[in-house]
Image (cartoon, rainbow, N blue to C red; front, top):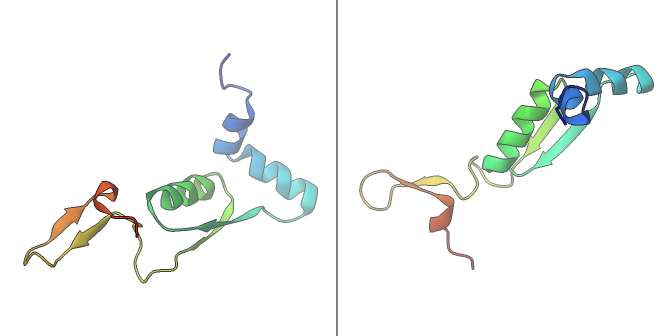
Length: 86
């Protein structure tokens, strides 16, 4: 079964958003909580599908657990697996 007429295909090409707009008179909007890699990716996909997006992050930076650590005297990129759970 292909994605030619699937809901996912309609969502990704913007057809879903225009359908919602026709039914409700305004374009759909979504709040994405968290500006880690998943939140940023979700917001990007939603934006490309013509959906209004508000991306919220509690910290003063984006990236979630992926960040650059300067405590070693030089910048070291830390992946999400380096984060300890406390």
